[in-house]
Image (cartoon, rainbow, N blue to C red; front, side, top):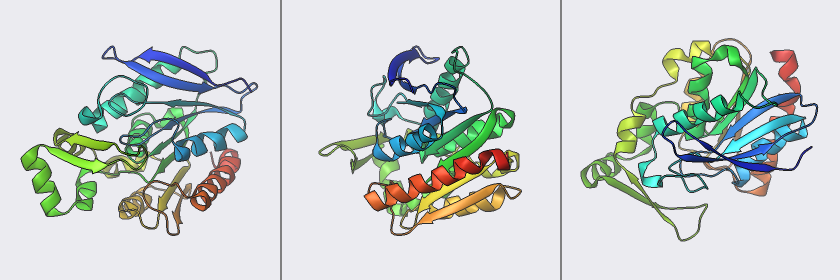
Length: 261
């Protein structure tokens, strides 16, 4: 195992994207791991997904999208599903020129990173060995139901949504209404029939997006799919027992990939 390597690459807009590469000698495969809205590559749950792949001999790429709270360019207030998805495309495009690149590869993402990785898998199923959209957003329409009518109306009227960050104490996150307008363009369900690779869904029992994962599970064909509901867990996994359970599920799933592919 080589040491972690941090590199800066440019996306299609000329912005810097901070990438964390963990290359494994004689790698068994390649995995890209993506954070959710306002997240960053070092978050505990993101690092846990990555560590599971590393433990199984994969080379792993994590990155901060633009317009989040990591080391890449941009501002959180401008974050959209589109910019997250395009950054994923750009990181994969960069990876193609690297000596450790190989396909098919694995994709894992949390929340907005989940829908981004699944959208990529729907567009390029032949490139994907396996997909793990965790606590995933499935569509703008479905995820809008996680907000009350009053919350949505106030967000639209003022142009802003404000909430306290749970990952960065003291931070108030402000997000433009344009985020929701952009999110409404996306829906995994119509093209879910293309997700014929092994798919791992994990979601917290207390997660407001639980029903989205259930809807996606039903829409995915075949028997290479599985859904795990973590008892008592919220949208983002932070408690040690939840983190351990998530990692154990990942490790078992990765072990079975060659049998399922």
